[in-house]
Amino acid sequence: MAQRFTAAITGLFAVPASQAVEKLTEGQPPSAVQRAKLAETQVGRARPKAEFKTISCSNEFPRHPKSGERSVMHILIRLAKARDVPLLSKLIAASVRGLQAADYSAAQLESALRTVYGVDTQLISDGTYFAAEETESSGAPLLVGCGGWSKRRTLYGGDQFAGREDSLLDPATDAAKIRAFFVHPAWARRGIGGKILEACEAAAWAAGFRRLERGATLTGVPFYRAKGYVELEAAEVPLGDGLTLPIVRMGKRALELGREAKSW
Ligand SMILES: CC(C)(COP(=O)(O)OP(=O)(O)OC[C@H]1O[C@@H](n2cnc3c(N)ncnc32)[C@H](O)[C@@H]1OP(=O)(O)O)[C@@H](O)C(=O)NCCC(=O)NCCS
Image 1 (cartoon, rainbow, N blue to C red):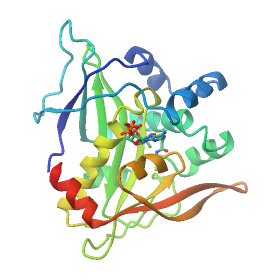
Image 2 (tube, rainbow, N blue to C red; image 1 turned 90 degrees about the horizontal axis):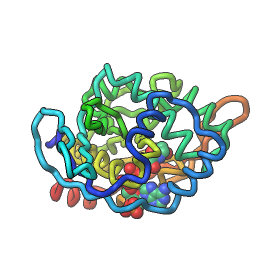
Image 3 (cartoon, rainbow, N blue to C red; image 1 turned 90 degrees about the vertical axis):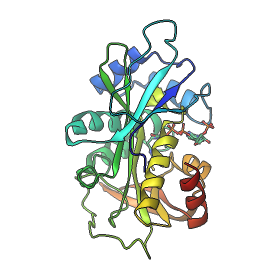
Image 4 (cartoon, helix red, strand yellow; image 1 turned 180 degrees about the horizontal axis):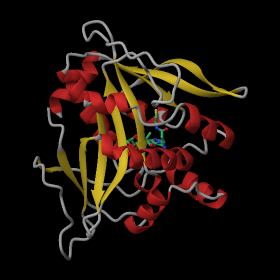
């Protein structure tokens, strides 16, 4: 199982990396105008194609080429570590506020950020949560995406979520859970979510699981559909104050999972 690999993205980014760094580190919610722009650029419209290829399996962090090849961006998919948690939390908030605004109200999003969305440190401890890391030419690491899988029953929710069930699943009979996928708005539709999902599916397959399921946000449904998942049932996550978060339980069958895992 390749848990670490680097991928080179060729093609120019619509949002300069420096701007995205600013957004991520400041962790500020976008203004109404920014949200409208994000909705326009993120929902239903792919950005210029990004090309991924595996270029190394080394533990060395990839750097940008010195000159003349500045359009090549390096993304490292690696296991998340406990020290990543503060940046992951900012990334999750930026992703939710930037990418889910067309599907949920601001009240739903802010409530979900308080009670449901967040880092599940159990996944980090289990070694089943991935971070997508990009480096500036200065070499400063930047987290642009995250997502994981789980051998435990909890279907969704960060550490703060009350409805957790951390007992272990049986790979022979149970579906592994796909968990907590978030890509920074400035890096959406570049294939990063897809690469993290491939890493999760391969790891779950290697652990003996032959089915996967997840509780998908409405924003995530087209992504999972594109990756071979089918809708199983609609559900509502209680958020308090009379609010709920509509989600969709989605699953993927063994045949599709096996074929993709083998060809990965
Ligand atoms: C869902 C999410 C993780 C997808 O990440 P991503 O890196 O943008 O996804 P990819 O670039 O790998 O997309 C792969 C394919 O999925 C489909 N897809 C992804 N986002 C889509 C969208 N908004 N509308 C329609 N199709 C979409 C497309 O087929 C896409 O391929 P294409 O770009 O060549 O058309 C990202 O949108 C996100 O973080 N959303 C906010 C948080 C969230 O709701 N997470 C889901 C939790 S269930």
